[in-house]
Amino acid sequence: MTEQQSVEKMHERKVNLYIAGEYKDSSSEETFEVRNPATGGMLAQVASATPDDAKAAIDAAREAFGKWSKTPAAERAEILFRAGELIRENTESLAESLTMEEGKALRESLAEVKQAYNTVMYYAGEGRRLWSLVTSSETPDKHTMTIRRPLGVSVIITPWNFPIMIPFWGLAPALICGNAVVFKPASYTPILGSKIIDLFVKAGIPRGVLNLITGSGSKVGKALLDNVNVNVVTFTGESRTGKDIAETNARYLRRQVLELGGKNPLIVAADANLKVAVGGALWSAFSNAGQKCTAASRIIVEDSVFDRFVNSFVEAASRLRVGNGLGQGVEVGPLVSESGWQKTKEYVEIGKREGAKLLAGGADLKDPSQNKTGVDLSRGYFYSPTVFEGSNDMRISQEEIFGPVTTIIRAKDMAEAFELANGVRYGLASAIYTTNLRQAFKAMYEIDAGVTFVNQGPVGIEIGASFGGIKDSGYGRELGEAAIDDYTEKKTVYVDYSDAVQPWFYPWRSQ
Image (cartoon, rainbow, N blue to C red; front, side):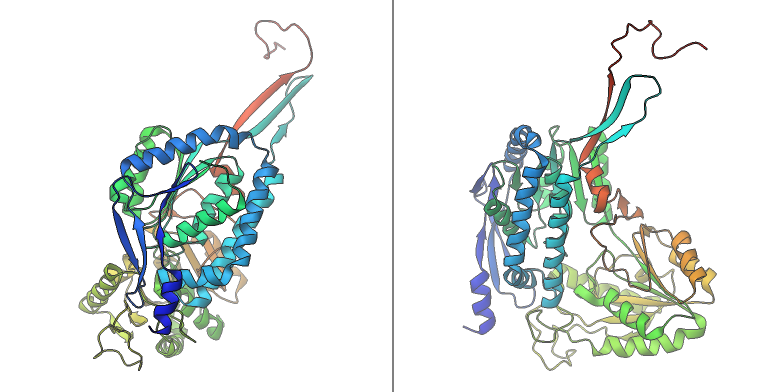
């Protein structure tokens, strides 16, 4: 047994459903496999849930909601704090599992686990800050206030590309606000979803408050969404699926948060510090093998510095080390699946047919004839970091690839750069590198996106700030105070302490 196989064996497990405080097999007893995208090694047999299982999870959450919602928020916070401490104590093991299941380089996995810890601790702190609002009344001897109440049953559907960080974006605020949760992780990364459940079980989460459903959306998605007892749905994923979910949610008039696709622009102004811009663009485009809704998949460079930037960026991209994410010094891991790898290959060919100029990469590293790294990558879904020079109207500039592919686009000036940045159907993240304060502020106000970074690439967001997109990139906001709004409803309360008999037209008075 090789060292890698030994590590995989240590992390191999069976992933069960978790419903009403019990780990369970699927009611159909069907399972599916999860394999390491770098090696093909077996990692888990996973329960494939049925619509009956989904209903059971929702029923369990609904039953648990009453008591959980009445538990003081400070007590709910103690459970989140304990979950956070368990994350910190198990950081290395969680990161190792993450890299084996999803593929990203280990240093990225460690950073993601740290971000999950930050998130749960942030919202644990909100347990003592679930403030209401007192408003000055228009009439004497009256008290007017707005209080928060939890919504009820939250269905939280999360993606595979950040399988521990993004779940906590939903789980932590939903739970601290007093909601009960049905959590469905992506089918490529259910192991991390199961480990999250384990953390909360050890932290003392009551039965039924948090439930886990694993399996394909096509099997259980309709059952999770077409249930009148679901009060809020959070979904992170592809835009077309998000639109379908929005239609279902509209029928039930329920709350929703949809974080969808992106085709994010990173603008390099003529006055930018090019060394800083190259480093930021490199990380933004190729970390996690480009499998990020915030990836800098379009790099828009002002004409006067175009050639200098391109030369430096292409050289840097060509030096990135691709391999198993657990390997020493590896910077870019595999794509998560065969379908993602095939999609990347197809878009590279589309770019070539469209007339885009291939500047770097474009190599299928599974193919020994194209792999010049000196490392055998034939068992995983590896593709080289790829750089095109092209125009904004090409498909590779308009459509989300979700792979290690970026297109550099020339802009004659900053006015055209902003126009190009907005010339897609998405509006999630954006960035500008500039030393000109005026240009920075113009970018903040002119770029159509939910987030704009200045002198930092579009890669992530801090916990205390809101995150989300516009146009086809989604609906609503996560993180920060916005997430408290996502999982609570506001109720206005009027108290008349005058003890006075009022006329029938009260509270309006004639002058």
